[in-house]
Image (cartoon, rainbow, N blue to C red):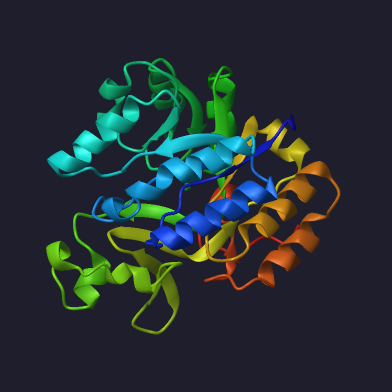
Length: 299
């Protein structure tokens, strides 16, 4: 196995069941990712529309030799949502925990700590490791140096960095998409499906600012952290997470794999990414300790 592996994170956007099923069939056929996350993370109201496809999706991915991780809601707020998280926590597969209320239901069995958990220091990482965390996907705001310090303090845990996609920044009890459409959250009509990569939000001056995805706030730019294997290993990073968008994610994964394997230069890969129909410009400020919206560094 390669020293630095590629993970395909959960789809954060409101894609139809048919689109999701086709997407994961392509992922299984491509064989680029050794681990793939499935499940609803952002909005529990969406889950009933896709619940029926997951058994077939999981079977297809596992038949292709891909490890499947079951991702759970990051902000469960109703009895049904909390029950769904608890049921997923009891599965024999690896799960991703995105809200600490899922920890008791997991009862010490292995899990992935998602990037929406507040793991900002070595103490928080050790707390989760002691309760079964085998992989920590760190919050997107952390610079590489801080990630390295956490990795050094928890050598038995696999540290993963969010490496591609609009950055998941926050969740709200209110739905931005519903409000924009003049609707209440409880009668949202699922208008977020109109924006399969999120809805761009500009400032009053017309400058790119953020993106909305139902109850979620994302970055406007598309984060692209493209390290070599040596750079990642030096910081203790053993996994890179790529977040699904409507572009060809297999092609994105191959670019990352080529840079990690040393068969493609970073500048060439960034050029190829920039040529794709991405929803925003490439950025990578957070990993460098700068503003998250800082344009991707050329070198």
